[in-house]
Amino acid sequence: MLNAKIAKLINEQVNKELYSGYLYLDFANYYADEGLDGFAHWYEIQAQEERDHAMMMRRYLIDNGVRVTFDAIAKPDKKFAKSSDPLDAGLEHEQYVTSLINNIYAEAFAIKDFKTMQFLDWFIKEQGEEEKNAEDMIKKFQLFGHDAKGLYSLNQELAARVYTPSATGPVM
Ligand code: FEO
Image 1 (cartoon, rainbow, N blue to C red):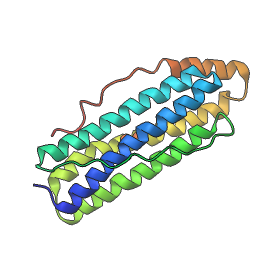
Image 2 (image 1 turned 60 degrees about the horizontal axis):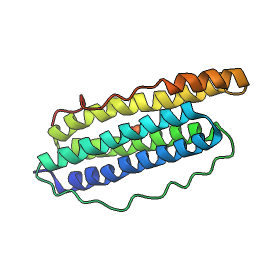
Image 3 (image 1 turned 120 degrees about the horizontal axis):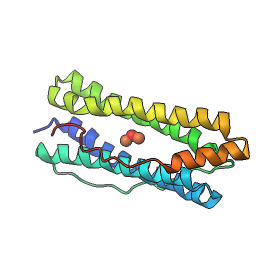
């Protein structure tokens, strides 16, 4: 049985991960409308990964005797004035998610919940990768996104992203 506070935080994080997926699908909607189908594809896959994260946390709770509950998922309300705006919003969002994961980890550490700390290790590493991906997207756009040929090539590159299920995540 998990500590009640830890269980509540992870249950809330399930909602945040589902929101992340919703947010990235909203990015994909924007890019689809802009005619940047490669960017849209990249964020569709990102949304799939976020759902995986939510499912991994849900499973951890269930396997530890917690009754999972769902709240409403917030409406994505970002407004984009130019094609690079979602990229900046993506990095900001991942930094926020990192802070949430770190907070759960800190709470688990404080009560010596080593099982949850081990579970969260995968997410700590994943957040490092998520932030790097978001930073790389911004850098690439700065380098290539302001020229039509460069933007076309970048769009092609992002269209090649392949979804890999996060099933190799934490052992539950
Ligand atoms: Fe689930 Fe993008 O972190």
